Amino acid sequence: MSTTNMTRRSFTKVAAAVGAALAATESVQLLEDADKAFAAQSVERVMHKTACHGCTNCCPVRVYTEDGKVVKIEGDPDGPLNKGGVCLKCLSQIQTLYSPRHVLHPMKRVGERGQNKWEAISWDEALDLAGEQIATAVKKFGPYSYWSARGGGGAYIEWETWGMDYTVGGCNSLASGACQCAMPRDFVSSTSVGFNCCLDMDNVDRFVGIVDNAEIDGKRRDDSERVFVIWGSQPSASKAAHGGHGLADARSNLGVKTVVIDPYMTADAVKADVWLSIRPGSDTALLLAWIRYIIDTKA
Image (cartoon, rainbow, N blue to C red; front, top):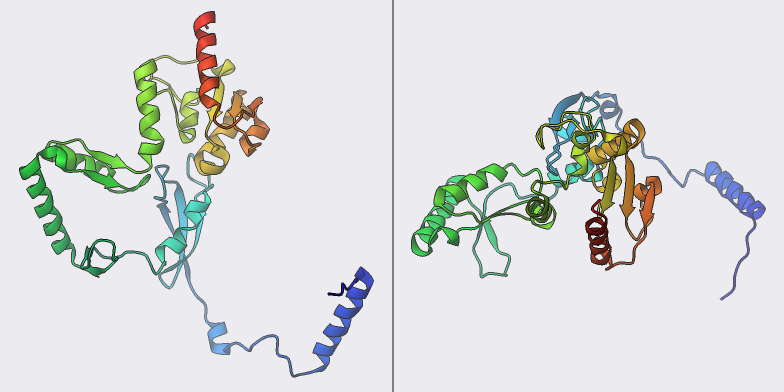
């Protein structure tokens, strides 16, 4: 196979020759004529203020519609925490809304399990079927036979599913996102230090003295020496709307120091006062070393 070497000068000459040839002939049509009546029509764009429900942040957003169809989503500058910022998950809600796989009606399985065969049913039929199955299971096997599960973050049915658990006398309520992050850290921090000291980055302002910390111990804190340890978290990426702003404000306005523990040089590691690029899998060893140091030095 031969290799053709083309310099910048020769490429420019070829491009100019091709452009001249296209301009001199009418055989190639690069643009199609638009219908003048269609082009002259004006479409009214309407702005609606709402909130994204892609996660628990529920960031205030502006949604723009044309002829009743969503055409644009942007952060609301009046949002007190996100300040007009939104993440890619929020911006992709348009694709979610108009996806051909978007489930719009209750679906009932009509084939064997695993065949992926379904039919649309009414809400009344779906509620009757669900209520009958739940009542039968609880009566036959007890309240713990009922298990409710919901989507992670921003789900409208979060409190409703808990209420259903209490109604039947059980407590088996699961959020797919929370069982990976919120529930483990809440349990560990509550059982070890007595309260949930492992905060979300979107609530960072509450823990650096911007507002009162009375919900913790009723006392105001001196945050001049506050240090944040960011471990297994990238607020600039995963908490961009709230956590990114909050952490940036804490650094610039309050002088908060940050320690980032991450094998990779993330956006938060670049801004950190200390970046610990540990070997993957050695997190527990580092944590135990810190605990031993605190115990020995009574820090």
